[in-house]
Length: 382
Image (cartoon, rainbow, N blue to C red):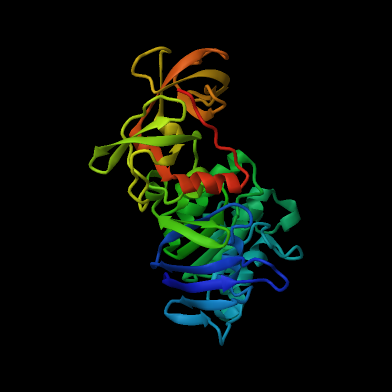
């Protein structure tokens, strides 16, 4: 039966550490939800998963699973008492056990008879397409096959909660995509609550019912994949979920209905844009940061009076469905990942129009945060 999860003000500082790995993280996960925690290395996602599993002790906060408190300031239940399963990045299979015995191992503490263990393991291996490998050992399997064994072991336990620690990161691109589909299908068939961590935005969006984005130990935004992509709460969320580029702009005028007109530093007027959700209402003359999704750029002929920018194509990559372009802008700016249905020539000058739906406007403080983080945000002369 799927379990609800509640995390309240979780904090974790490792002994000798100068910064907290987790900072006041609170989150409620409904039963049966597939939640993906997304963030770069050092964001705290693995620490959060390990605290939920009981591998790490909290510094403060409360974790409840299925209404039962498993960790707080006074108590800490070990992993084997939390009724959960885990799929590890490095598979964590017993090298001296066969595939069938590795899968059946998850049933041992449930006092299931050996005959039933073997029968259920055979059934689960058939579900993941490994029935013919039951008698082999882990070192006789490919990486993808080992990961399917690990998944079968997690599923056979029939727990209400499955934790996945970047299970696809060691696989090549083609196998990673096929395993993603398998994990999504099998976990949802099991109807378990699933918490899955990754640093891959495309993987997160493809798998998740809900996404939680972590930055430096803080949970900065949660929502559906569509919410996260179309309404990023901060420049960090926008960057980590895919940008073509960022520009420094200035508010030229208020266009009504909360929208504003902006100009690039040095000139050039953009379409009416809405400030990012939660951002303070801007005033004419305010500096701002414009984050542009690849989907927010349309190509046109150079010197069209409707263009918002012009640029020079510096790279063209064929992606099957079309081409992705890198475009240099006057003033030192660059856009990457811009889609084109045809192949332009390198060095060709092209016009660019921005779609308001693919552009996110943040206050100038966001640009200052970017500079402090060591990222260069170019100015643009249109």
